Image (tube, rainbow, N blue to C red):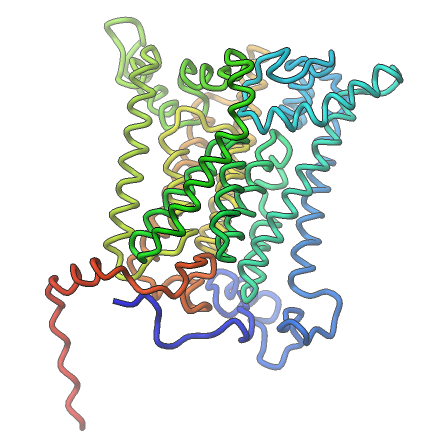
Length: 502
């Protein structure tokens, strides 16, 4: 069975207009005159026919820059490092970037891993050192500068550039749907968490890896995804969907090439540090192994509900309370549930009526990791942001998810402030409700994406493209012969009789 439809719109066609194709946007547009008309002068004309400077792509990139600039302003109260009276919580401007400049010894000129264990994978540690050590050197020569501020701003500039590059990748992958990238550029999560940590290093590399795969360059794609995995582990998860899609489309050579080069890049980056400073290099793994249930996770919600019934004392513990005291079991259960979710995604890939798109599977896998993980930091929402835009560019559910993330952000800082002052800002139930809302909206997005996979005619992207614009060698490929034969053995439903002419 071929996965390529017999009719569709090629890349030279007109662009998608959300006010026509997206029900939510169409409804909102009624307040300003309704959907874009057939004779309107659009800013997203096909390449070569632009009559205006402000094309859709340039507008989206400008919006991304504006959002990041506003994010920098939002973090401004914390940039001097003088966090008195819990200003980092009352202004909700805390950032690991500034805090860890001192906690990781960079202000003393310590080289990451050599002189101090770092709690992040090596490429993130390298970035910390590459920006932090020059700032320290300048500060030694000029004690009047605020090293923490300089370090934060240097990182904010680099991370913002990676965020803009991510928006550019989304635009490149969706040339006929440029307004999809506005979901990313205007996302409240981007405004609130862009430089809370170094996550955009991994996100930018992962986005570039997906772009390389779409350009049919599996070696480069694997290298970039492997480098992303050396910054934060999750980009490695994208190799799984590539492999299972390659199996279905009989494109295993390209898939194996991407996986092999990805693992080789990961090892090449890690090996020198792991050999020379094994204890300091292993700090990341030690923390992840010994860490208990963290705030806002599925396990945290369960532990809170256990506390409504059980005291938590030995002999009177609910299952989640017990797991918090038995970390190895918690780790194994978390990994097992994630593994089962990945198996479910693989089965869905092989049984779907049409081969799923890469972005759809990537979102499902990364979302499953977060759902079952014992740690779900506030900025981890950024991992899902570009994948959500590529997987399901529908404004309604996306904005509902972003609203939940904003609620969680506010409740989380209330929890931090209450913990710092020993005076609760909100009842803990409010934070648990916000955590549940965040978890629930991510689950809803997963369900909607699964529905799009099972009913590909509902897929917004496939209403514009023939197959999978992110698929690279998979785009337009027929199913593998073994899968075609297997499907032929499955009885097809009886066709409905044709209506009798009047």
